[in-house]
Image 1 (cartoon, helix red, strand yellow):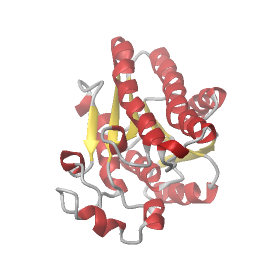
Image 2 (cartoon, one colour):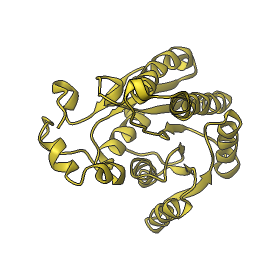
Image 3 (cartoon, helix red, strand yellow):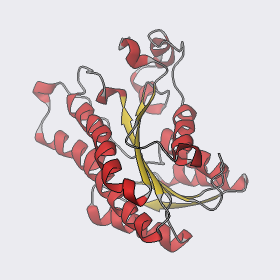
Image 4 (cartoon, helix red, strand yellow):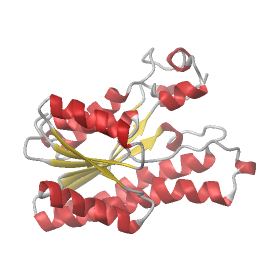
Length: 253
């Protein structure tokens, strides 16, 4: 994928999936604004790798639960790189809680970042893309929990299902501006958070996955690269499932 001359904004780059997305876009030639909330040292390490490989990347710390912060994020990308062509709304929180024990604070925390942050980030990015008059790409990070029911993840799953519908409705409105909007449904990915909850996470999820292995952040990044590329110019309002076939069977360990 050739993204030379493109500018990408990726949110949630202080975690593995977002960091790998940023690296992949930079390797393809895009200049990347790596957005994070805290954990600056993690993002700095990713940016060092990008620059060592000849890429361009800048870190930006923002709490994307705020509409103003999302607007400032896009303004920062324009200030640093001059434009915005790709917006990957990857920032999100996972909170596990049984339905009968989910309180208002948990609900608000999930909705404010996973849905509100993604919505207004996409809005700010789309406004900039429209001003540029040459199209753009918006991609939301959804989850298999937004396609299938998982016990203890009702509130989280609802936010992720909402991102899939958001991609469809925004694709309808932004299509005339040559802006595509899609969602990635992400399956069981090996990362620090999942390993902290299950030391045998890779083996457990490989056993119930048709692909015979757990997923890795690079699997998600490759899918993002495709949707951000010229090759995906006529794909919009689509949910690309990146789960190794997990939702075909919908088994859990």
